[in-house]
Length: 223
Image (tube, rainbow, N blue to C red; front, side):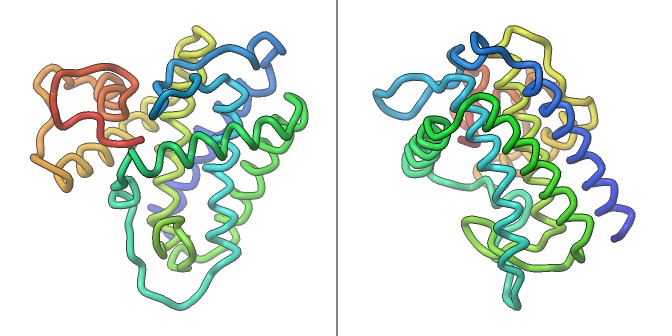
């Protein structure tokens, strides 16, 4: 494992453990809280339960990559992973999370999510960074996949703390990492350069991910 990949994995672990600490402290009332996420179409907002289900699914895609290691040509990288049609992807993501949450109790889903985090991190550390497997949309190397999971942990960690009315637990490093990927995503999808009023990384992450409204027509960038 190279120093860069090791640092990337360490950062992912830090962000996942911060989210995990939040999960272990949830109450039944917390579980039923609505999130601030605006769904695609005329459906109810996700509850915290549904958000946790999505976090488990999202990080669990790492296990799918590790289980499908193969020879092949990677089709996406850490930035292009996030290029998708929201109108097509969001309803699928929404339904899958709601169904996953409905099949679990709070205790069982929190336990499963914690296990998903640990198994994913163990698998990453035990696998060569150049390994190629399923990255959901296309084949990806593990080295390019890991940074996408940090973005997921940071953004959905923000979703969780927003729903709970608490300050974010994402680290400055995790937010900066996410901001850099969103900067590059903006450049690839449209015209490079954040709006002038979004110099703060957390504000940029929120606007670029649709967690805060912004008048720039290029935003939001991701589901």
